[in-house]
View 1 (cartoon, rainbow, N blue to C red):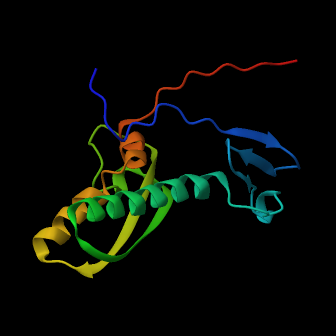
View 2: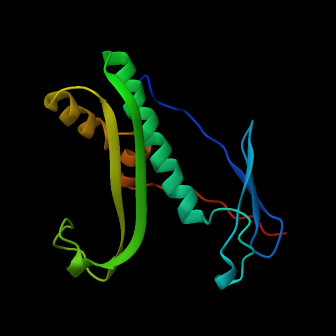
Length: 151
């Protein structure tokens, strides 16, 4: 089995409903919250689940580009990423496979790189930006192993 030096063997997150739609999320060292906007019955005390997902993707993109630039000695001044999620009809998706139908999830990105580098290096950084581990996970799809306990 091939392994990567970036392989994270396991990440564990716990979430607990603490209000009507408010959720407290925790890992070993951090706690944060999620909620839904008021127009759908939440109290808007935190990002909604799709915002958290996009935030994970944006953070991973920025970190991956920065790590690559540092390792290669590239003078990267800044990197930022804007991600948008929307449901679009497969017929309206220019980059989608032909066998898709109905509505699909589409994530769009705008990634901004600033630094002292040539066009070849910029092109390589653009490639790296789409190869962060979270992007790869979402792109490949996920296999779920779920157990639901009811008391």
